[in-house]
Image (cartoon, rainbow, N blue to C red; front, top):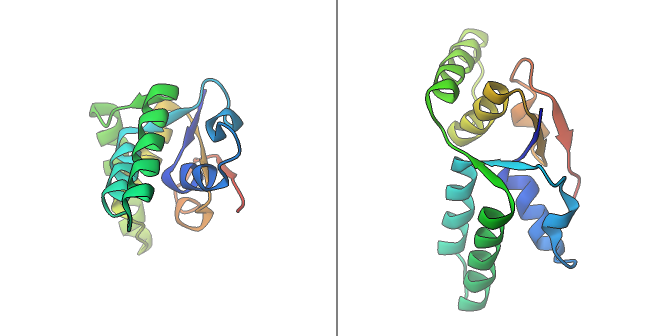
Length: 132
């Protein structure tokens, strides 16, 4: 259906700072709500006010430009299924990545990421790699 950009992909786009980096994404690109949290947390951790301001501006641009998908009942049910699958395999991935993957799978979306290694453990998830 759509394409969800994860945190690593968005950070890579922001770091390129070529014009409006978000223009690299399809017009109907989406973002998981937890990704907004990760981006905002990065703004809070910035080492200087200049970086904090730039990061905050990027978070606001992401919110204004992309549809934010909430973590709601369908995503929660998919999350539980994936969590159990990973547990049975003896695997883990980061909790926020699991939420992002569940959000993508629950909506039938592909995922754009720079972090293929984590997400390739999720069965059925179509992954598009955004290189450095």
